[in-house]
Length: 165
Length: 165
DNA sequence: GTTCAACAGTTGTTGCGACAACCATAGACC
DNA sequence: GGTCTATGGTTGTCGCAACAACTGTTGAAC
Image 1 (tube, chains in turn cyan, blue, purple, red):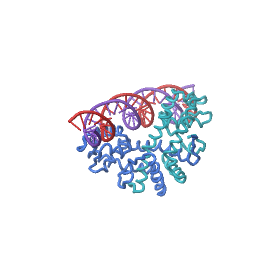
Image 2 (cartoon, chains in turn green, cyan, blue, brown; image 1 turned 135 degrees about the vertical axis):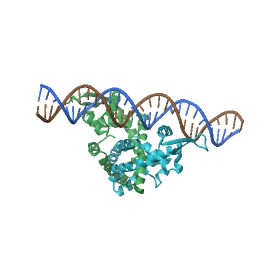
Image 3 (cartoon, helix red, strand yellow; image 1 turned 120 degrees about the vertical axis):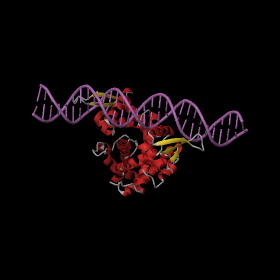
Image 4 (cartoon, chains in turn purple, red, orange, brown; image 1 turned 45 degrees about the vertical axis):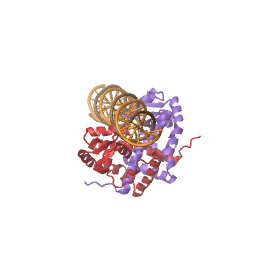
């Protein structure tokens, strides 16, 4: 089949999105690393646990909530456990499974990191947009995620209202 | 100062954007790696060179076009040079500077990789959106980049029309 | 109750990105 | 023309992510 190239408006959107993809994660990471010694992904893991019942989640569920593979999550959780922010224990109902629970120190850490992180998100993203653009961005990212994550593994995460992100 | 938390619409947009940030680079990388043995960043480097006059750019200019730091670019270009896709030579007018030029093999490589990459971008992003949403996305990412890249180092890249991305 | 495929997680290896330290040249100033 | 700072680039080290290989457990088939 012959390639259907991007036309000018499509290309304009894509080039800018690619740049955001390149720059934004670094900006988020460097603020969190500098101020709290966390990567953005580690922050996200702690945040997801902080909202879960009993601050506990199975590794598989946590991986789905964070869009991560299980091997990646396993390494990250081990490091967070070494730092005392998370504890792991075998699931009582399924001997294959492992539960991860946020410790008090982990709770304190996420409470400490949240304000600076939210300020960074505002500074780089939300406050750059009009309220109307925020709504448009929701619809656009929703459409992209439908293609990217067809099983909708994260859909329960998207559709909650009370997150502490 | 007391934190201004994200309200519900803001949070909805941010959670989805964060998921896109997490998933999209991996999707792009894995297609290019599988089909052409390139990372998305390597592809982007080759693409920027392919559009430059004489297929040549100074390292600093190439770093700006690709939103990369110079150390990162230096490593990547050395690897691409080892693979024969790029050649480096000292700049004749400034003995401090290095020029990077796309070789014929590099030119063939980018021509070979482009159709599959464009198809992936269409599949995951562009074709998921209405034409109106594509326009909205351009404005939104432009606003974010203004905050993220205040010097507008990449602005010449954004505002070209003829890219082979 | 054995076998077998699927599931849940961990571990080891490899490769890339971030950061800091470093070397060389250019241009300004006196 | 010699010093001094800024610029342009490279190299080395460390930490994290991707991938593959592996262990142990479950549930179903028979």
